[in-house]
Amino acid sequence: MKNTLSPSAAIAATLLLLAAALVSVDAKAKVCDKGWECSKSEFCCNETITDFFQVYQFENLFSKRNTPIAHAVGYWDYHSFITAAAVYEPLGFGTTGGKQMGMKEVAAFLGHVGSKTSCGYGVATGGPLAWGLCYNHELSPSQSYCTPSLRYPCTPGADYYGRGALPVYWNDNYGIIGENLKIDLLNHPEYLEQNATMAFQAAIWRWMNPMKKKQPSAHDVFVGNWKPTKNDTDSKRFPGFGATMNLLYGDMVCGQGFVDGMNNIISHYQYYLDLMGVGREQSGDNLDCAEQAAFNPTPAPAASS
Image (cartoon, rainbow, N blue to C red; front, side, top):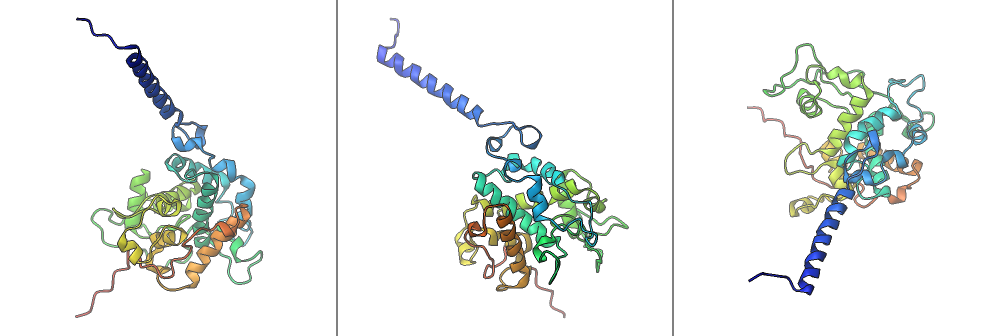
């Protein structure tokens, strides 16, 4: 006996096939390509960084970086930042959560960068917050920052002092970041003070990736991808800008009350929000880390016998 579908069953089957086809088309439609800046990703369908952060804004944020008394004149520029960001926009950097969140994330990331590369102290012309990207490396390192390591042993003659947009210290960190960027930073740490795109890329990699398993990245805690555990909430760690400081610097600035180091980073972030037209009133909840326990506490010194 020949099996045939009833008219209603045939219509239902046809609708299911159409629905499946539409889901497939919709899934493909989510992948967009904006050329060199952002390609083959659903995130590229959003407004990307060059849509809301242009060269004049970069110049406003870092208005003193090329003055004669700055220490990295001619090094940092907008194109280097955008070229580095292009690698991470398809992964959500500046493209997660819509335009305003993208602007806030760029301001947050650059707030860290500006505060860590600033030479604006006290009554500096233009105010202390106008001097971000003044440095590209530590000027007078007190040590070589070499520690014994089986995986990332120090290269003879290399020094691992602070370099880059979020300064990298210690051979292990140069090794980890270089391995992930596929750049030989362990043997050539000097690359981070010779190539601004590479320096920004290393900093964005650090922003986008956790340094330990089962921990979030600074990106995740900022854009709301991270859900704190009970241990986190008991430690007063919540999503927001404050937790980005915790992940990047730990108890050097967090859990110490409202210390100058933490306040300075927050001030840069809010200053950049104002200059980008977002406004510091949009800084978000959990702005500080004054009472947060560190994600990665500094090891206590070994007791002497």
